[in-house]
Length: 161
Image: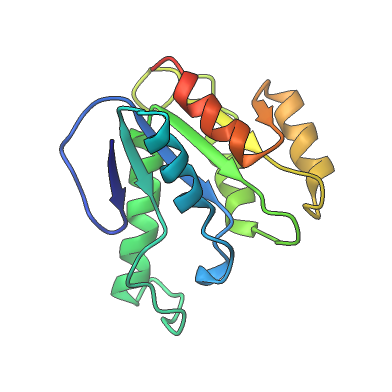
């Protein structure tokens, strides 16, 4: 398994997963680390696109004029398009407005930008403030949901790419 964190780029091809979800400017639990460790234990062979940037600085002004911020947004958008599977995690107690936006952008299409299945899995446990909205969206667009991070890791491991 290869974990690629923003803003690094790769030319590798193969089964790939984008880990979209709660980060809260780096202040939330590192659930991405849990997924990576779980997939390592499962001996999963693929590429993880992890937007949690090691050198993130929450003082960066969130404008397109800020080179680092714009680079991050571009990286995330590009790697969601590249991934064979996009997963979105909504942590209980978080707001996660960007994750909601990403789910709306990438979750409603039956095919991706490259005319291949744009597979999406959502993990939205009880306690997320807009769980009802996420549940409705997933039902409407027939997006698979799982109830925990453990199940999310198993779902990634068992996914057919």
